[in-house]
Length: 311
Figure 1: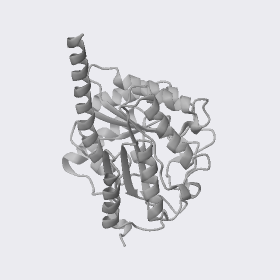
Figure 2 (figure 1 turned 180 degrees about the vertical axis):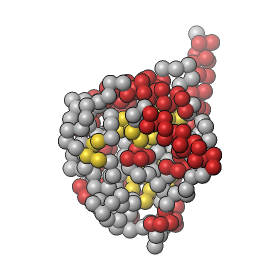
Figure 3 (figure 1 turned 90 degrees about the vertical axis):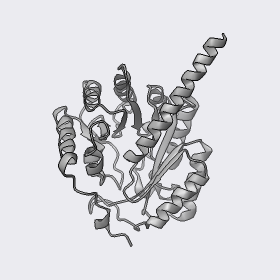
């Protein structure tokens, strides 16, 4: 069995500590929230401690309070969270441009209290990030917007490069793990609709292991994801944030994580990350996707140039 103490990230020091503090001060100074802090991510030292241009923080849009109460999540909840900050799109753009990143990860809390679930606000944040001479690549981890696909489409068409939405767990455990307003079919529909709206979009999802899932259930989930052309999947170990949250059913071994990486690769996923500390916005995957997206952009430019020359 893998002991939880062995899963802790290394302590940051030296240049990494300086970068960590620089990023933390920027986030605090602009009044932004990060899922790294709110969800107590074990990789915060590695990601925030990266050198300038490679340090990564996942900015959490629409505040630090969620209207959902998933049993695995450390983010605080309320049925009536504070109103949206109308200046957040500008604050986010300012922070990201200051860090000089070429790959940005955004996520958000669920905002079931808002008519559009916050879709227009998220789209504005993304468009502000893209409104520069040398825009970063943008990945956005979204809520399910209550299953309203027109709201999903607003975000999908906002200019982002990677649309992520997490399944979290297998179908049989959805009601045990997630808030009652979330479910397997609804999340699959979100990911499927994105591909219909923007066929070239990279779609991504994440699964927690150690919640009590069975092997055949994991495999079926992977098959369902590939049937709707999801490109990227990540696997990580569920770690209990506190005694108030659901218990860990099992600690998954490195061999088991490797097994699921192999199985996902056999099914044809574009990229797979699998390991105890892997999270949906894990920076190793960002480096790979950066190269993939840049190559796709070059190919698209070549096609446009060839079409122009022949016309």
